[in-house]
Length: 243
Length: 55
Image 1 (tube, rainbow over the protein chains, first blue to last red):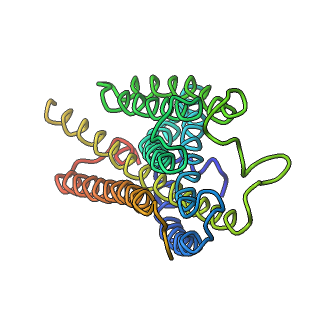
Image 2 (image 1 turned 135 degrees about the horizontal axis):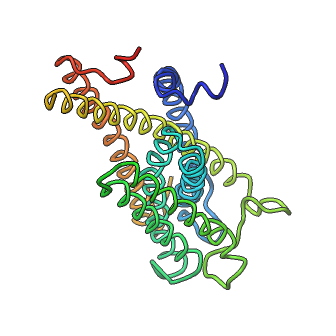
């Protein structure tokens, strides 16, 4: 099967129906293993048991950014190739990415209070992450309030591309500015600074959250394709009544 | 497993995450059921999409 075959919504739905049960099973297994390893991981020598928040906070942050990157790629498909599935993919990623960004901000805040002594500071990393959440809400508002779906899709695609500028700002904010947030500690040229006893459960949880994201994304895309079919059928019904 | 003096913060973080993920899953499932139901109703009324007619 060629990759281009996925561009056909009917064929795409058939593939999603076949793949979703496997993805759900893999997600459940990964979360079972990940949570077991995370909850039984040793305490950090400085932070104590609060390090357990890392297993939620870090994957949520990665996927909040991943969601926007996905929307930016989909935006190119919408604006350049005008493919309807690209818009479906972009629209489906927005609420999921927003939810993960929200989780990242809330868990970060709950982690910050016992470790930094404050829930929030206007630090470059925290602020750029909050900007990401606001951008997500902006895209969702464009999709939900546009009278004509095509116009809403184009506006959301433009905002997705413009908002992609925020991704390197989030990533490098801890290097460019003096922040309270710690610098990168997992993906570094010189290797991770996290002990394997904490790094392994973190990576398993990150994989579990990634599978959850992909599963939800495909399910939301399926819902969106069905919603567009409903809209198209209602238009046909209205035309028949008028004729 | 001991969560130490900051157990409230850890439990709150896991509870919020569970709530948001559960809400997301519930929304996806309810939306899927709603779209399927409306599609079924429209097909029951004999309404077809343009692509189905041309096919």
